[in-house]
Image 1: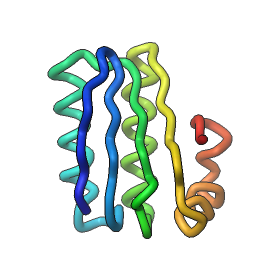
Image 2: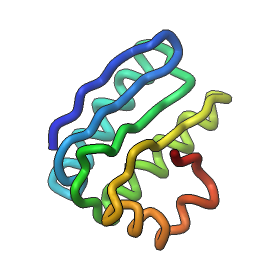
Image 3: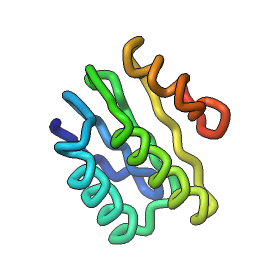
Image 4: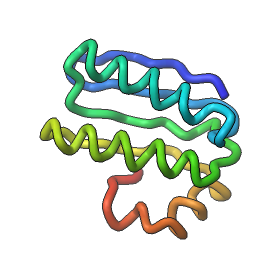
Amino acid sequence: MEMRLENLGSTLVAKLDGELDQSCAAEIRERIDNEINLHGITNLVMDFDNVSFMDSSGIGVLIGRYKQIKARGGRMLVIRTQPQVDKVIELAGLKRIMDFD
């Protein structure tokens, strides 16, 4: 899994590429959290255009970042999910609590 982070004022854009699973979830979580705390980020956009697979560890990454951003009074948006990843997100019930585009 590779991830590029881009700061746009109070918004952080995380562009992920590869498989979001147990092997990389902790690193992804840590890098995003560090950026949020370092720059006072209140909004997070996670771009899943190049994410080909996500397991329950990925769900945990999403839920944790969502709670963190919501506690800051911000908004989290997950964009461009692929069909196979979108199905996991749907089954986990995340579409009822988070914003997706």
